[in-house]
Length: 442
View 1: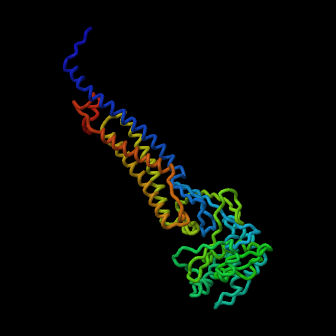
View 2 (view 1 turned 180 degrees about the vertical axis):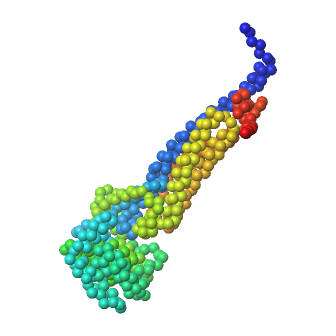
């Protein structure tokens, strides 16, 4: 049987051919955007999982006075950072001037074990029983012994009592102020290899001491205030030489020595060799430290970590929060992007486009917070960003920018192609029906 097709129906189909071609092009573009959304979600997860966002390099090595190490490089992300340093340790036979902090325990676990072992020794028990006639008018030898014993034994209350007396009689006096309060000038670098000049010119004054440790005499630079905190014969007692620096640090005594103009005198060993570990009387021990960032560090943790402070922690928490929010929003955006192919109604395209733009906004917040935190670190935290270091951004930042651009472009395209297609503007009756107004009844 031959079917009769009206000329009006054929004409309408002919008119809709360009509309159908445009509609299919639009679907191909939006399908490509949907695939890109899934790809950008994967890229974003990879980006926030890596610790290659910020890379700081120190060239041949930048000396950090706080740790007596050479900073080599570091790389960090949103959750974790790694720091590569080299510690110069003077060889036992080297004729150099040493800072007294160089013999200290560095590892916190080793320090705790040393304090526990020292607390069992007879001289510590004897020191803890020393009679101290109070109130004190000057910090006596008995007071020094008692204070050290309480510190080793972790008698916090008793140690804090003696610490307050020490601060009143020694640390906060007018005489001690010029020795512990430096002026805001660049430290004067002193070559520790030039022992003869240091000794003859009395560069460090009475802070330079020749002390026997482990049956060998060494030249140590010991601040005068630190000398007033330790008991006589400290170098002959087991564990004490290595506990000396942690002890005076807890007392609030700085490790540096000032000249007559209150400028810091800084012993700086030669830079590490490009090859090998030994050079100029030093052995340079490489140290790589990686750790996850404590998002809710307490004040004690912040005080013991010179690489962060409260301001940096605010930036870090902002980055971490918005990074997680971006994952959630991008997941929703990907779902709604593909749903628009099942239901071509215009409102779902607008919803998908809006979610994509929100994801782009949260991603750029993470990037902007990172840039601001790096700038703050450069200006305020010398330990984390030493002067003279070079900054480069790692592939984590580039993946983040890729995610932002994809979300921004896809969001705009979904909004651009979300116009209503009703009646004669629709490529077919199905699309025309989908974009008709919906009347909500009972």
